[in-house]
Length: 130
Image 1 (spheres, rainbow, N blue to C red):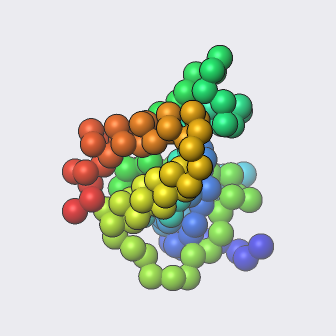
Image 2 (cartoon, rainbow, N blue to C red; image 1 turned 90 degrees about the vertical axis):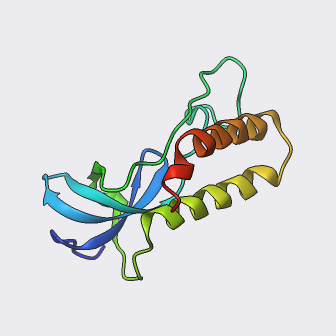
């Protein structure tokens, strides 16, 4: 694993989503990271019971906002050496990739996840896309 320092741009997995951000503080076993872009949209539904819709609480998880801070375990942080995308377009692309994945297979879970994703997009994300 490459050494990560304050000020480095990293890719970090956090609460079922993956983000590109800047390390702003070393907190021992974790880094405090400021979100600059969305790499992978967080999963919808109950992550402890994947694929299930009955008998579980089906969570709606939104992506972290631009400049929001996240406290990430060090093993989930990796240096990012590519160009940093703008937040809005990166969020839009992450939503589209997740939508396409959910549309690949017809299932109750994928339909419920699509509904959550479409609700997030309509009520929250469209303001952030541009």
